[in-house]
Length: 272
Image 1 (cartoon, rainbow, N blue to C red):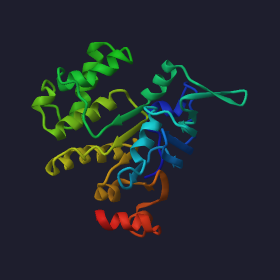
Image 2 (cartoon, one colour):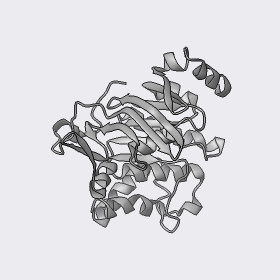
Image 3 (cartoon, rainbow, N blue to C red):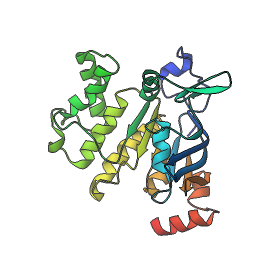
């Protein structure tokens, strides 16, 4: 899939972002939790309009890397740029200064994230869940937010579930609401952290189908998953992580079909 702008605004941005920069660039990213060195110098480039699938054993740092990109975690060293903009910091006089939380919130709003657990508001209907952030964060009117939410829920195949509460929806339907909720912020980038791992096997396909449609639309996506079939079908690049580092990366034909690193070979032998 060739790199393409993810939305029409990319062609003539006025927000200071670089439309020619990679969507995401990690350079020497480290993360510690106390003495636990979770990310040990991660380098990664994600071009615009591409799908990157991250594979690796539990504890390899995949989810932490996503959380750092979305600034849910603060990195310990290195840098992360999204659309050419340094995330979480400004550089002045050769030194980095932490951004004000409001500026961080603006940066984070450009990145949608879907988690293993759906985290829907149980007291809100499906459409209410999708409307909430555009109203509270983007200042949209209720009418505008509702119209957009209805469009997005239709897009993910839930046009007949707008007024259903999470308790009335299957796990797959709840996850599709969560995807619609992330899309309601009109993100330039979507992150998926094992979005099907909490689902019963028969529900996995409906969520992956929505993700395939997103990929086909040109949305830049980074997906942590063990769904090798999905990776084969939609990934532009596959990243294999172990022990907090990128061990191997490249196209599907290289990393999944002909891996060269023993740790990649051993992992795939267990999951295929």
